[in-house]
Every structure is written in structure tokens, then in C-alpha cells.
Length: 285
Image (cartoon, rainbow, N blue to C red; front, side, top):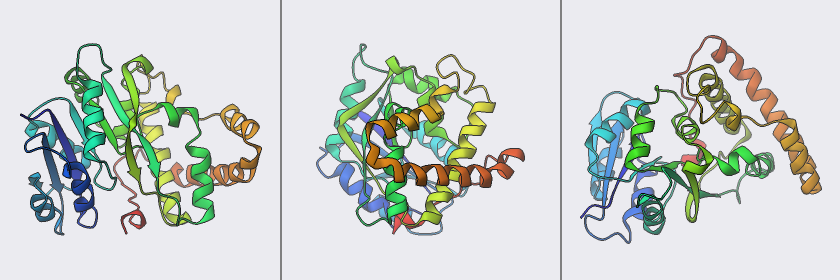
């Protein structure tokens, strides 16, 4: 009997969808998880590869993650619901840990796995940036930036009531108080960061735009967020430098990337362009 539904929005993810599904279902029992891949606006073999790996597939010509999430949620069969980005990796054991965390009336409403970043072959500026980013309090405590968010039935109702925004994972994280959400340390999402500094900047421009959209809307003003959980202050960076002085050169890179990303995002924020998705293709190689 299905114990959880997994929803995977996928736009031209033929290079990575098989890798994800192999990990997700490699040790699963028959029908243990209801895995729904929503192939949205694809012109590659994403849908066929997903079917070959045993997933249910929904196809839509609309290239929209928002629409894919909506369609997947309508088709999903059970709870908890686990939303997974196609370009990460998660094992069957990780799925089970997330599912079990949300099972029962006393558990949290939302959960996400710990991050495992693949940085060994990335250039030093990219590694330096993430050495700081992963130590930020908001990043350590929030559910965003992990590629996976799981919710109970009550948690699902809450995020379904949210207005549509580009940064769906940040919005979902901010929809829950710290007491209502949990990072499950026994589950690990393998994250593939950008392979170049230029691609890192593309991601950060998108992140700046996402934060601006949320802060300006009802989510950022809600009682569970107050807008502050998505923000990083100079005191946070000073704390990191004080605890780990060897990271001072890395802090320089982090600040430089942040300044450039904010400058590049200014036009989109001013125009309220919250639909242009700056996708990083290098991490999908």
C-alpha cells in the first residue's frame, strides 16, 4: 500500500531524471511510493525515461514548474507528499526517513533532508561561496535550497493556500514556524552546484529575485515569516568569520558574488519580472 506520494516536476531533465529515480526506487518495495513525474514543456526524452524507471508520468506542453506542481498534486494518491527537484539525488532510505518523520499526529508539518553538496571538481570561487553559504543560519535552519520538501496532509493544505511564486521552496519553508518544520539529518539530498562562476551568478540572481518577490508579497509579511528568515545580515557573516578565521578569503568571494547578483537582479525586481527562470545547465552535465 502506498505510504507517500513523490512529485517530481521535470522540464527537459533527460540527463538526470534516471539518476534520481534509480536512487529513489532502488530499494523500495512494490507500490511503496507513488512517484509522479510531471514532464512540463519537454522536447527531450524526460517522459519516456521516467516511465522506463517505473514512475507515473503526466505530460503538459506548458513549461512551468508552478503548473507541474499543481498537476502533480492533483494526481498524487497519498500523504505525506514529497516534492523533489529532478536535478538532485535522494535514496529510498532518505524517502523513508522523511515519510516517517511526518507520520503521526505529533510530528512536524514539513521536513527536508540535510544537504550533501558535490564540490570536489568545482572551481575555487564556487567552493568558497558555498563554504560560507552553507554556514548561514537561515540556510542551515530553512527547508529551502535542498531540492526536496516533504509535507503532511495539514502541511500540504497550508502550502496549497500560498500564492504562486517563483521561489516555491523558500515560500514553503517560510509557511511554517521553526517548531513546525524539521531538517531530517538521517536523510541526505545530493545537490549538484554550478560548475562555473558564471552559472553560480545566474543562480544567485534568481535567488535575489525570489527573495524580493516574497518579501514584497503576503508570504513575506505572514505571521510565520515576518520576512526575516530569508535574510542574511552582516552580523551573520561576522559570526562566521569569527568562528572560522580561515574563511575570511571565502567571505570576500561571498560578498562579491552577492553584490554582483543584487546589481544584476535589480532590473528584474524593478520590472516585477518574477517568471524568467535563470536555469543552470552546467550542474546537469
